[in-house]
Image 1: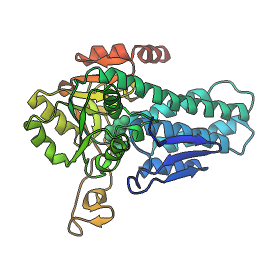
Image 2 (image 1 turned 90 degrees about the vertical axis):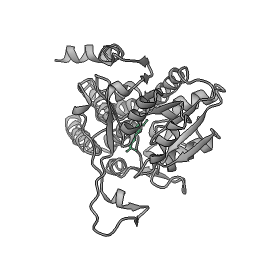
Image 3 (image 1 turned 45 degrees about the horizontal axis):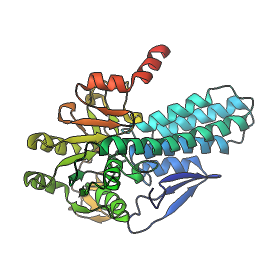
Length: 355
Ligand code: MRU
């Protein structure tokens, strides 16, 4: 396991490593107030789809524990307001809404008092966290089987232990392949404008001494053309049922390059990232973040004052560019309508029952 924790519960606090400070400072924040946890998601102190889902679940457990009322129906009403608050933090990663739904499901069960209700919510959040780590390990095993020895793998953004409760998805595949002695090396895209690659992925890989080289995003095509990239592995924020994948802005470009050059383009994600209500990538909401994240780096302007800028945080890689989607339940390949329906068989049956 990693030498750091991304998100955990230390009674009565939710604890987060501050990802805006890494790699220069390793700082942990303790939250005793659910609003602080919601703001931490909004401000990207914690980020990465599975980590956001786990954090929201723990934030909701904190809200339930903090509730002053002994009246269960009042406590449930407060809780539903907190669910709405957490749902407004970030729009693209479906794991957030998945985590909230899991917690709502527990809240709606029969309880005799608020103490047993809030304790059940905490236990569910802790279970979600543990499950995320074990699913990442399984994703790592399934994915490592696809990686050839001596491969040079390119990854984008940070889909590592920092983006999950531990181990990671895309970096989980890389970690597992490395620990199997496959002698791999990693190209790390810096990931403009938030620099998740340069700051976070580079930090994680260096901690474990996994051979890695940092490049700027616009160098990826050059190294692919030179035959220096054998596979691309990325994470995902939301996967539609036709296999379209939303991930960090720049992923689409890589998927096109991979197709053009005939190199495998793998997406690694837990099934909590697959949105059974979403038919295609066109339905995925794309977060538009502050233009200042483009015009400034670390608070310093790099563009003329008043320059207009845009910052879509994510893009969609079409299913036809994706070689395989690696989940904890196994590897799905085209035709994704069929293979993802099989992977999500239980959830689809439950949804049919509910309707
Ligand atoms: O804006 P971020 O940093 O939350 O975006 C994160 C990504 O795009 C990751 O690649 C994705 O969430 C997968 S994390 C396992």
